[in-house]
Length: 289
Image (cartoon, rainbow, N blue to C red; front, side):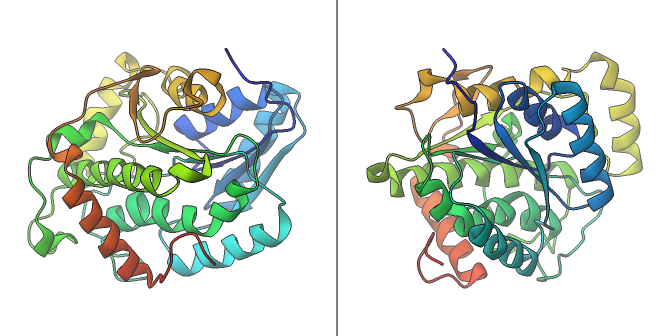
């Protein structure tokens, strides 16, 4: 069963294309108030107008943030905290793969900065708004790619020695699961649920930042992959179904709890990544701004 989403405030990162946009469109059809968080003003505004036109829902808003930049997240987060009274559902969706090793403005490897720290710090700044919400849900888009990772090299988390685009991406998706698990533990007494998901292998613009060979392979495979609408289904389910009211810290695939690897269940590793992230972001207390 689906909650009545009318007037619910839902914030979605990376919402100008792909799964994020499809998620926003499906939830907009349920008459939710949607905030699209995008890096590019022009692309974000185009997506906003398209969603309004397709759904007839005028309550679609755009906010700009570079989720690979700690300073951008802080500036946008503080503004949003002053603007909104609450957020019912926070969906961390933005992510990318990079064909060569790049560094963020903070000197972090770009995949790690965007896909992991982006989720971690973004949620930190908006957690008080979720606390004031009604549904109080946090949804993190991960990937079955986490199963590719058998060991974490804590001495080279930034892949300065051996950069392989797919491996680096998959490790960031493992960290999304860790983030979900630890945050769910920390928020257990606050009635805030935190879950993550695998959206499927999607025929979207995934891999557009990858190497030439990877982009070519994706363009060949794209007609045979899952549509963005189907890829968004589990995000929408976790955002709107009453079947998950009391479920937190879980990993979903096709709207069902799915298995994860032994490494993904390693709470010592999860706590270690959490503590490293706290130090990198220079946070004293998570979720308190």
